[in-house]
Image (cartoon, helix red, strand yellow):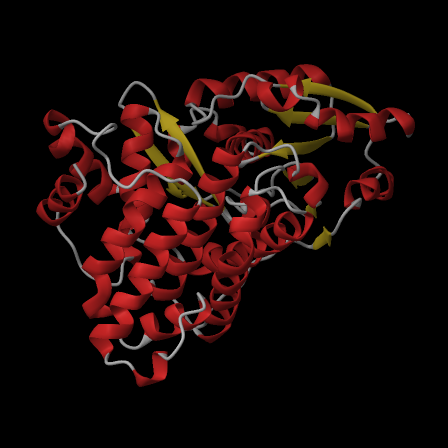
Length: 382
């Protein structure tokens, strides 16, 4: 069996990288951009950093901002209609996972209209055409949606999220500019940073992991452990470090999958609209403890990457505990809640567990699980 790696055609990194956007569009012969960004980013002037550059270059654009934190089928369908009405020939996705997931779905349906119902994109959809030419500009250091072949849509009617996996959806261009992340509030920086750590750890221990993705994931874990606290404190070094770290994590997990932390977080997001990064951060240490006996020596390397000293002299039980404790401490240091007591309700546990078990991320978990096991994990945090 061959291992596959799918990445952006080109990516730009570093302060001021957004200045490359007009030249990219001109080089592709694009004449009008569909700017997909959420209302808060527009309100706080973050999106304007890019549109000012487009204005200066006399590049036409239309802004679409009907995006929810957990984008819905209806959001996507509105976006498709707006894209068609705009006459645009390219997409610029500015934001976190919500903006980029919406943009990916819009770009796919624009070129594959037979999937206009959106639900038919769930899983590995047999699309024939690559999405509309897209430049992805992340404003959060967490989701890595700019470099992944995944996107997540909420089915509000059925109270569930579904994962779409499609090599045709990856943005051709990623522009990772830490200046675009400087205005993130502390809570969002912490949550998205812990999302990136979850990507790195789940990607490292997933069943599909291999040598190249292990390299990406361990470096991402090291960078996040070094820089997330600084990013929350809004230091330049912390922001720049996290901008790179989350992208490196995305290079890995997009190609090998995740596990039940994400499955369980998707259910919480669908039912309670829980921010994805917060849900992941709360769940991660507990699920790590659950998975530990199916991870070989990998927790030793996680502990090492997180700066734990003396791991080579530890027993397997000790370094597994050290890895979980290091994750708990980082989560505590950046202000993430420790449990689900203020989020989940007992009467919803069965539905949450069944939804998580049916989620596309669950099969990648290193430990085979069940609805009952997942329910027990939820309850242990309530």
